[in-house]
Image 1 (tube, helix red, strand yellow):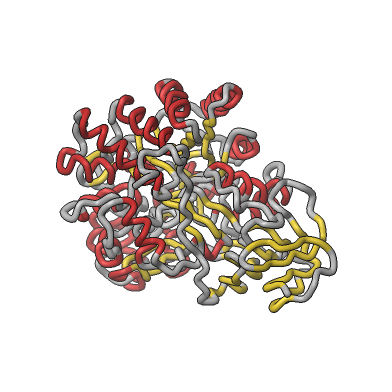
Image 2 (spheres, helix red, strand yellow):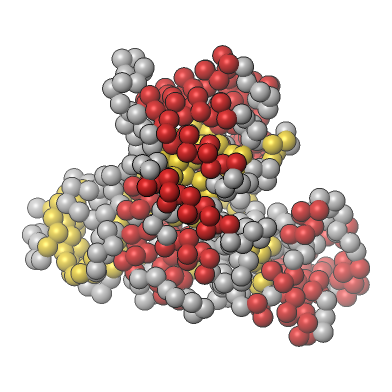
Length: 573
């Protein structure tokens, strides 16, 4: 007898093959059989008219701290994600000196907008070395699987202490390489680094941002010795010019995948095509370079509870900030308070921040329809022109809607043409891989963790401003394609012998809810979350973890330890 059988499901198996009706049976956590009229099971599910897909594999998250306190790793689990890869962009919490915890928290808070109070109260710090961090994760009950990477900032802080922002000595570089090789041998999936000036904390740029190529190449050579590992980076150059030769050299030394963040930049809207073309050339030469792309524009969400909005630095708003939301809204609706606020200038002096908060032609009401591909006519600038008002007046009224919980959508990248065609070009390209959801991060400003659901609700079902994707194609992109990028060959497709990580989806009813701010982090910290409808059931290693979006309490998730070769220096340790 099987443990679980889905009867007459519309099977979309992750390979890109056409959907077909079939029974799917599960036993001992893996797919046991696929066919017609399979035998009995302990639990039998009538799946007629429902889509059965592999669980989503999200390769770009930041749950490095949250894994200490949240067994669900929400919101990812709410969106059918069954495997997350964390430790991206060079930031994380291992390895960690006992006297270096505060520094790592401050770096994460600055870069990824995760409340420091939550990290202070929530992280158990049951480790020092990276292998000990892996052991600590392995000991935790989890609703989904976790894959961990070694972050450059934490590595530098561990080896170099207070000198983490300075140039490393040859001995320090050798020690960093040794630690990475050791971590990979014990199951880490790769190494990550940040080379963008946008990643800052109270200490300045993230450690490693300006590290010389020799340091990165020494780490790459250690990865080569370990015999596996993905090298992930985010860079201002987005794989072009200065990055091109470095990434090729890294790929040559690691023998594995190099993946980097690629988006349409407003500074050069067509440059992403050069990045894709370079990756084609690299892959033709046997170098596994994969641009990592998003399914919608990385979007700031401005609101009265958010960490950024157009009025956040105005003196009147600063005075009202300590008040509860309801009292702030009531005050802002008073004519004299409103007039005073609108007469003021922002006190923020950073020119980039000022521009981001006042690009009125690129700021839109998110609306009840949760529109991430809005027409230009929906912008604050267009509304203001139609109504004969200032953009500031329009923006304030929009933010006061829904008792002050309404949100404005302000795309950061990928919306230069004010549609999703550039995104589609990147998503469908054969060398790219989907990522960049940043699950667990940007708690007060960005909520892109819903990317996997949006892939279905928008790209398969709802897009009206251009071509859609086929269901089979979309599922493949978020399952087999993402799993393969990290060598997770035991999942990502529904085939006999593969892990039974599955989503049962009501395609007709699947929809995204509006993002909302909740205050459930340790210490009462805030975070933007977004729920979805349409996930009838999510299965992790053969056990039902969610039914109709509700946590069942089962915890079959685990740490995924990636395998190193016997040739590693740590094979005999």
